[in-house]
Length: 256
Picture 1: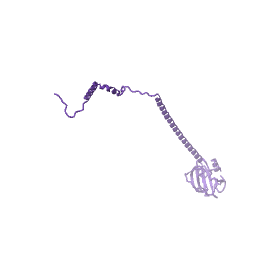
Picture 2: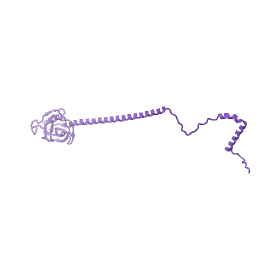
Picture 3: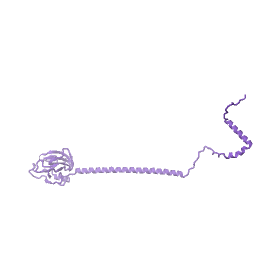
Picture 4: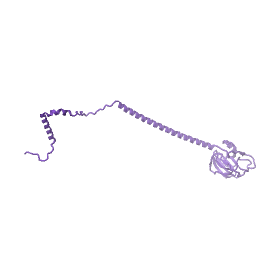
């Protein structure tokens, strides 16, 4: 049976058909001599053959100066890092030394302050500033029940400031009979001092006092012929334990 192509719109020739047609055309040109005329220009226009492909990895040649530059850069970076670390260590050390110096200065200042405070607390002063002794120790007179003076009198107008001669603790205040208004202080060295004939008392029992601190005002209360300060140094807090007050004050550097 013979097959015929269906009528209607023709399909595009397949690849096999196109190739066969081109081959037929080339054969026709060869027989007519036309291919000779076209061969030279066609061959001249062909591109250069591509380089042969191999499985080898291409090798790039680098100038000898490049590794040297890289090494120099690495050395410079290392040197910069080391210099920065050294500078940081120097700053830290300087800060630590400055801190130690400040602490040492504070400690020295504190030691000096403590030493000055100890010195101040250990010093003695006269009970009346700028005064003098008007009646000496153990002076004889019928004015005193014992027949002699158990302390010393400092010249002072009524209302003159009376000071603690040294550091101590107040053990007695108030009326003291013939002594009038009085204050008795136990000193830091274990001795006792007494201040009599006061017009005013400015401290209370148990209070700590420091050298030169005002404790009252002079007056003429008690058995007295006029305003002054009666001062005693004692081995105990009560009457009858008196010692030479001038010797006691001079022992502690007071010029009386």
